[in-house]
Image 1 (cartoon, rainbow, N blue to C red):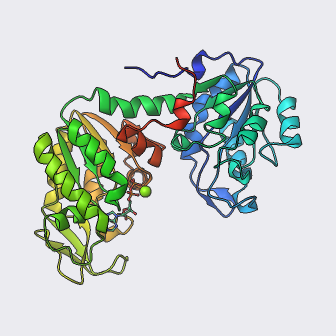
Image 2 (cartoon, rainbow, N blue to C red; image 1 turned 45 degrees about the vertical axis):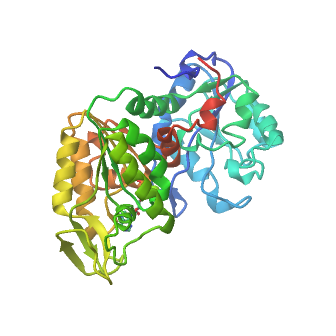
Image 3 (spheres, rainbow, N blue to C red; image 1 turned 90 degrees about the vertical axis):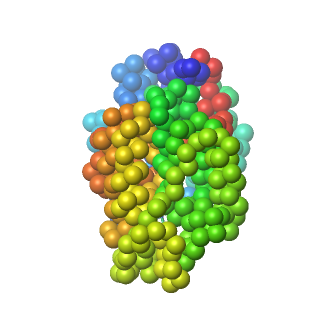
Length: 394
Ligand code: ADP
Ligand code: MG
């Protein structure tokens, strides 16, 4: 089953103005781009548009400004983009309006401009039709390459797509193909590794993969909701009240579905969630009072690593512990190494899991690193993404 939306590859763009939604929601530090992974991920589409002689009008959001906020201007992003493409990037001081229109009209074929932060416009998140109309006026064609924002029905991701011929960018297309490939045609065994802070964020993914995966490996703080559901002591570990019920339901479903749902058999515990915490290895999973489970233990990590090594396909979302603190990073590191060295296909989603892989210098070994946290989860849950749905059918 291929991607069902029209691709920018097949769009007539030469000599036309192409409004291109990208995900340039990057971390800034002291007025500079701290990590340009998301900008680099959009380069294939931008280069394709330049080569084909389009006039490219880029738009993205950045952070969560309440109205116009100079600290969240796209300016440093435009400067970094200009360095990466080795060409000038005209910067509009506004999202829509006279100056934006003037700059867009003045673009020559092959040139690139960047609009100001789309969330400076109050109509962006509300998907205001008037804002969508004014955006559409800037261009002849629309391309959506912002996979990381595709789960949001905003004016730049959804509203405007109904007003212009709307195509998928190369990154968005690849993201959807890679992630849906895990669901629709995985090489088996399919092993899904899930961790992270909150079970409520991931329960819909657990539920879906109980029907699809051969094995689900659970780590991170969410395992304590499972342990609580099994009436085991969790000490001061992070447990979501509502999560315990969800975990109990998942355990019951695992029995019926015949999917192996694996939980840790040992833990690393600490007395606080801090770098200065006392650390102990616990051969078992019953956490004493005054302690919290902060990583999976070495026996668990080794067993998870073996399952991952034997997988035909491995999907990983969510760190195994509080990996930002060295004392509690070993489990996440072992899993990250197994994923990076897996002989099978490896796909990783989730901002913190991707950050962990990059922190360990292991990102190169992974077949696909998703740029979309929330969007990748919603796609894996089987939800339609508004930013994708609104595009032209292939
Ligand atoms: P992702 O972004 O990969 O989807 P999440 O956002 O769900 O991952 O979770 C990542 C966070 O979970 C990290 O900040 C990590 O420190 C935290 N975390 C993982 N395990 C634990 C734990 N046992 N106790 C506290 N925090 C944890
Ligand atoms: Mg996260």
